[in-house]
Image (cartoon, rainbow, N blue to C red; front, side, top):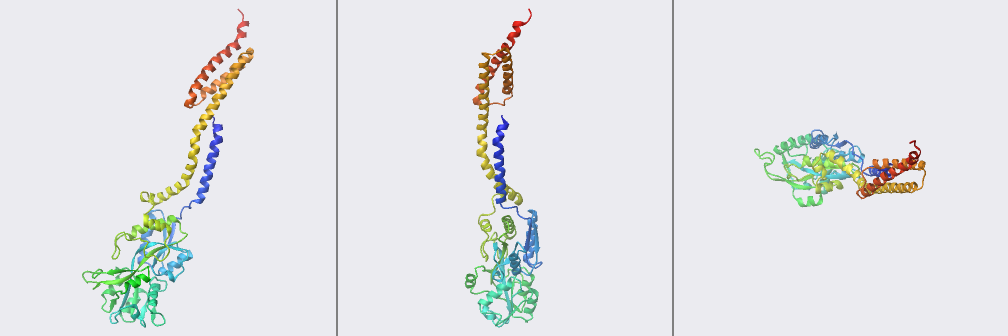
Length: 434
């Protein structure tokens, strides 16, 4: 094969492929960062506990999660908006308490019941009954505060006609039991000791929601759950009746500029952590695209409806991401090269045919020269024929269509070389001594 001539085709093709690869490498999303900054609530709270579980699972996939503790959902929203965090847990109903431009939801994760405990001596039929009372609505920066203020405001209870307090959960529980406040809002899991303590307190009662349709229609991020009699403690019969509670949902929120691979990592982790059944959650009910207050991320929309991408179902996460990226880079290049590769055999055949044709032309010229030449010219022709014969013998296997022609060329070369040698040796034979 004439590699020099073939190089004139192969080198431009490879250069074009490398150029396409370089362009695609810029167009395809860059590799994601390996560190994720995650905003959670106070240490030992539910959000912080879940964040540690996320960090453990993400580490197995090659990522490091840095957890930022704080007062709660409002602080998390502020951190996300300012770029201090990439992702975080946010309680439903808090979106209007902080800037949310550029923030997207990845779905709801589990129910967060709204516990409204009140003094047993002050019956509570509806939220308007709290007008003029002393009410704990949560610390500044917590998730319960904007939700409680919103619920109270829409029922005519405001800071102008009532006393709204910002206490810690423990301080609020103690104040409620001793009669220093009249009611207190909490959002926490039913397994938290403080909930059990208040449910067992003889001085405190738990509000059971009425007008549930009105609440869930007005607040699309809210739903209702039923805390069944004895659900917390069957032996002590806690609670002592079925109680209907309003429930927000914990949601996973990210900045809109977070890398799509990080989004998929968080969704994969959320599915592992939150698809288990709970006191209020059915198996595999979460994560969900329901009860979200912020716009849903497009990657999350596809993931929650169709599941993870194909490769992530069978390969470790980071391997799947790497294979997917290389596929996006290599497949277009392969698509470009395949048609070019197909012409290489035709190019090879063409080059071989040209070479054989050139040899035939040269042999015919020598044959014509030998008809009228001196012995010296016959010797030079013989040398040329030997060079052609050497080239023919070094030729790689020819295409099938040229094998017959090459066979006849070799026979013609042998015959013509013998003739040239004979003509070159003829004078020497005539003048040699006898």
